[in-house]
Length: 249
Image (tube, rainbow, N blue to C red; front, side, top):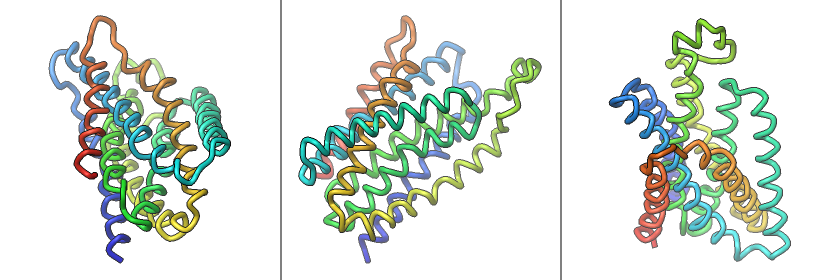
């Protein structure tokens, strides 16, 4: 019973990082324009580093014992292809719904794995919850900024507001996404814990998709000409994952 409550609490806190990132995104100007721009790119890069640490330190290592070479290759390739297909679809419709789907695409599989880990022995579960939260803050920040971009008066005058939402509505939607984390965690806890191969496939599938997202979407967005802070942000994001791994092992 303790592991169930641990799953629910940690998955909820990890999901709450999305609206927390959105709240940070609501701050219009954190300083001069150059600083605000560099901070945004640094936050995106930090999220990319956290995602890579989740793949390298938790998802792949936890999946390997229950996998063979063929299953590993199949799961990761399918994950990359699925996320690539999803990216191609969303690129044709960059509205608010697209941004929500993109955030959930990695949050739900990771929450499934989180619940299963705590049902088995809890090893790696705390670290995964920390890494989910670390990546959800910049994802929430970036998605909020993109989804509310139409609040710029110039964009409104040019008629680009059809699929965009106002800040308070977007923030409310982010809050409504939070319960999906513990719900997926409970599914993983009650069902996936008894199916090691299925859980391993999901973690590897998510790993392939995350790697696609990092190199297709996050890394290109993080780069900023003649600025070096964003690249250091990726290092710090990965470092947080390493320190979390050391603290939980």
